[in-house]
Image 1: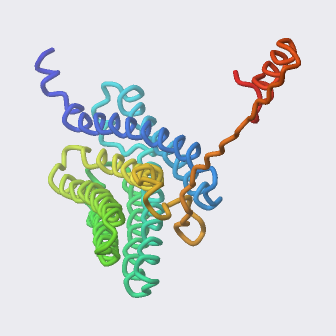
Image 2: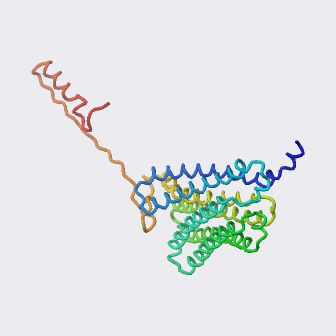
Image 3: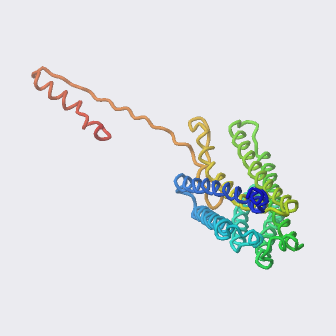
Length: 328
């Protein structure tokens, strides 16, 4: 019995993927939390951004559901069927397709930022957009091939599959790097020698853009390496599933970070702060200036009698007469 367990092919072939799907589910929980925070914090955002966030979360739900579905099919429905591990479950293609759509939507969001920051540079934005669309084409190709070649060994031996997988992940990594470098370049040009607080905010935005692009690009590169080297394992597929969650959290994190960055600025000493997104980008609003109102009451007494005096004092200091209503 121990020899059978030691030679169990499921551990090497599917074990890494199972752990990575668990990590993807944890990231989905973070995505759900960030979605809730967004709708609670930014009710005045444009309908386009609200729809964008809602679609992102729905795609994440579908992606997570089918990740669980194919894990259940391999582990529970196909329990002890070692030969069945070589079959490509139909749910795998759906997870790849939803991940491609999700990552493309997020990348288009960043491409829009590049378009705005580069003063609507058609050449720069067009190059990045080309690789983004290429990512979609490669991803759809990989999805189709997963149904045409329904066995893992056959799929991974096909040159066309290698081209679509490597091309799609490579294009995704290239777009992430180009977006991060472009945003960092234009943000650094916008620094001011006289506004330290603005420079600090720019530095935080640059750091976030670089880190987000670096994480997703690293996941893409590692997936390509594992696909080429780990022929007897599906660990590459787990990184692909995680990558979609990273894109969703990167997008939602960039939206929710606005409130955190705004709160770090002293509203009494600084100029306008970033507020809700509009269709044209950021909207600046002046900080609220607190108002202090002072009320004075004059008590006039006479010598008519202590009873009249006491009554007037009681009327004057009755809390119900204080402007603003009753004190509770």
